[in-house]
Amino acid sequence: MEQSTAERRHNLYARTYPECRHEGLWVGGGKMKKHIVVMLVVCGLALVSSGVSSSAEELAWQEIARGRPDLSTVLVDTQDPRIIYCGSGNTIFKTEDSAQSWQSVLSLSGRDKTVNLLSFDPYNKNALYAAAKAGLFYSLNQGRNWRRIFRGKNYLESDCTALAILPEGIYLGTKAGLFLSKDRGRSWYKEKSFLSSSHILAIAYDAREPDYLYVASSNGVFKTADGGRNWERVFIGSPSENGADTPEDDLGNRDEEVRFSDIKHIAIDPQNLNCLYLATSRGVYQTKDRGKNWELLTTFGLLSKDVRFVLASSGKNLYAATKSAVFVFNQERWEELSLRLPTEEVRFLASDSRGNLYAACDKGLFKAVIDYSDSYQDKKITAASAEGEPDIRQVQQAAIRYAEVEPEKIKKWRRQAAHKALLPTLSVGIDRDTGDLWHWEGGSSTKPEDDVLRRGRDSIGWDVSLSWNLGELIWNDDQTSIDVRSRLMVELRDDILDEVTKLYFERLRIKAELDNLAIEDRKKRFEKELRLRELTANLDALTGGYFSEHT
View 1 (cartoon, rainbow, N blue to C red):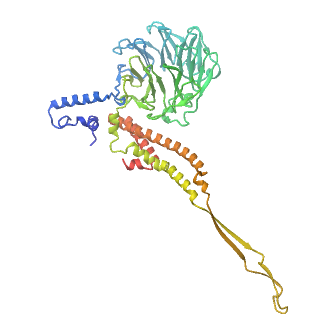
View 2 (view 1 turned 120 degrees about the vertical axis):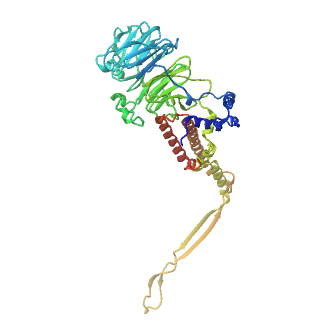
View 3 (view 1 turned 180 degrees about the horizontal axis):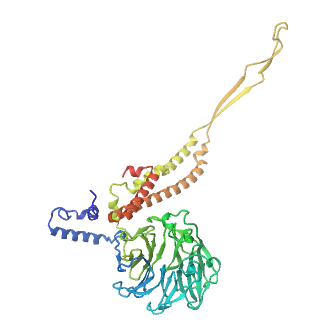
């Protein structure tokens, strides 16, 4: 019979904290109610004394949009987190009391007038912009009144997707190019070159350095360092079908141009303006030198490499969103934060100064409070998940043996090379004497076959010699070859150990997440179990089946 979530968690903590496992402390033994109180107190003290904090798997999400579905974007006031704006379909809602009550501040008439993006004016705290499929809208009084300041010539130009408000003007990204207004929206002109017709996906900038602007488009990432006078492409996009794991049924719901681009979103690190992050269908790329060099971050922990949104928060944390999950980059791996997030599609992420994370989803607006003081991963729960499985050192040794990269192999070669001088060099020689090989048969002239040239018997000589090169006892030329092979073997062994270690602990984390996942959430459970099988297969491939045989 399948255990409930409470029973599994009870058994997991029973194995994790044996110090609490005294008679009468665990529920279910027919003890009195006071034993339950004692159990809670003892376990609470154990958690506090061990410094265990809430793990990422137990992150609680609260729906704060009061049942408003189909959220596309969210904007939190940086000075007053109680003020929140969100776009739901063709309507913008606002709350001034931390989502206790909401009011509609803008409603667009007509079909398909979705609000794509909301943005504050960094130079006017009362000004607010709304980029929608029907154009760009502007409010000078915190959303009470609105007016449209941009409308394209066709539906692609009118579909506004990205926005940057800088001192010299407003940059507006659409599905048909990048536009610029130097008079606060009274007149607009389109940027030239690659940005004149590209689908603009996102714009990254910081008001502290207004000359630098980064534009993510379907053709790549472009950078300007002089306020838009010159543009340089710093990242080239490639087709998302090449190596991407985007489902085919989801590709049909996207615009044709975006389907063939692996770039999804870009964000600048507020703690380091030289650092940017790029969300792609292959994972998250990072640059630490303003786009000159890009590095693909590890994908360990990501259930899907198709990252659609990336957020670098002021709390020194990097968040990423795939189609239906939210992750945080922690200690060179991704940890899922959305195990309790009831949604099918995550569309936008935002954070505030109080450590709150917001996710605009198809099922509403969700909020979570994250504690940054401690690690997200509960080490004791992870250790309990490893019960009944080989230790990491055993798995590493199995991988080394299977790949035949043991350190003893090189030592054996060195000993054998040193003893080579004791063995002689064997030479065998053969000498044939052909002087008497042919001769004339003499004798009587009356007998037959006289005076005939005949072939005689072979005259063969042979010899055997042994020689020693005692100088090889001091130095052997084979040592040079062994040194080269030793260096290559060390590099190969390090790569194997690194891969095995990552896979091993990734599998433990997935198991811990499964233990904390509700049984009712079948979709996420299926994804986690599938990932668990994948990691097990990878470990078996590296250890020759050792891992499964000893599990």
